Image 1 (cartoon, rainbow, N blue to C red):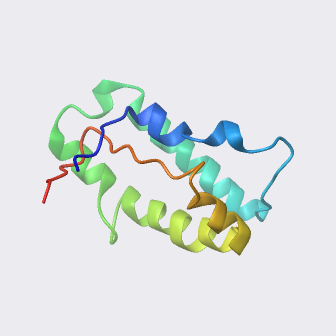
Image 2 (image 1 turned 180 degrees about the vertical axis):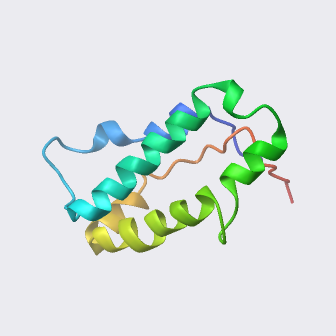
Image 3 (image 1 turned 30 degrees about the vertical axis):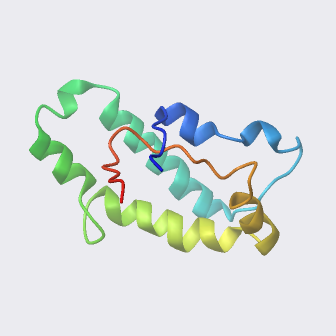
Length: 112
């Protein structure tokens, strides 16, 4: 079965309207600031096309698990956010209301 492609906005916000107001996750200030500064830096880079005049510049910026933004994104996802959620929240993330069956446009999905 071929998966349906969705917009980045739809994929990221999928199911968030099902979360009751007032629910929260606690992060140490140092971790929150790392997340905040990372989003700030991503916005600073990508908001102006002059910052990435060619594909090589984007590859250098994004990097991978060993350098560039890839290092920071892995740290946030694996070391900070994964440790900040309890098992009930992890279950919620994988539940039907939040599990998005859409794939992004750049995903090269091959039907078997």
